[in-house]
Image 1 (tube, rainbow, N blue to C red):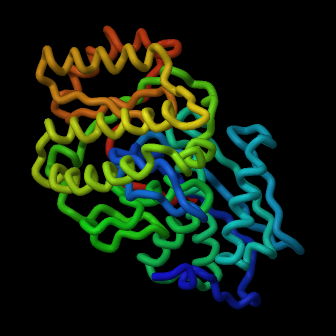
Image 2: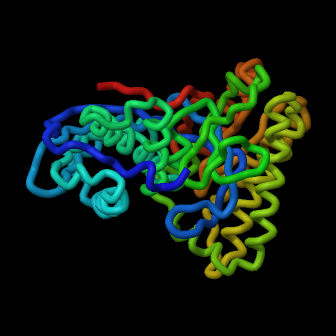
Length: 357
């Protein structure tokens, strides 16, 4: 499949005002992508759990206008700092959604979790906006095929934020061509089709909010620093190998191997940041304290609790639902002390985006 299939061919006489809303989840990558090629093509394949509770809810009023434009309200207030990213997104997708040139978009959006802090808020936000735009295209007569609808939504999401293409559906999505994943694509995310072992279908993710504020280096800047990175080639090979191994683990339920892969991926991601030029460190002292505590707890209790991180200081704790009571007690008694104001989010593997209007 090429990009040409996503270029809308619509009859302007059908154009009309339209209102729609979508709620899209964040996701947590188990195998990370770090480094990309133009335009928004991943340097390696990635695989993620779609979350359930960490979501962006977006409603869009599409009104006919003489030229493309938009306004934005985030959690009840104007948010001019978001405008450049959204304008860039709309400019990128216009060749595939030419009908937008005759619409004004009034966007109202909110998060159930902190934005710009390394919890993939741009992923959920772009997925919800892309799904809203695809709903307009369907209303105007296009995208009547269900599979194509979600493929295009993921394709458009990718042009706003790479990992957003993995927030459209669930419970697991991959992005990037990989020889062991059928139908994998660099252009959009695909649902992980292998049958998950039962334990992973209800896996829990508690997100420890070590730092709620905006991170010091954006993911876009971080990806760019992989160009010419001395360890880039080895890292891309490692990710491809880990994804191949993880596919088997997700089917056979080997939690020990799952933990090794997931934690190695998290640490490798941050190792790339700390060895880039210029180098930077997104982990905070409390991040490291949590990682040490988790490893000690696992060794002492034999409970299969593991950690992962995205590009930020916050820590995702992954564990089976059957261990929720014990892990929750550990978080309350020990790990919450390392969180900003004791804050954390309780989440789990989810089903994907949901139409709300």
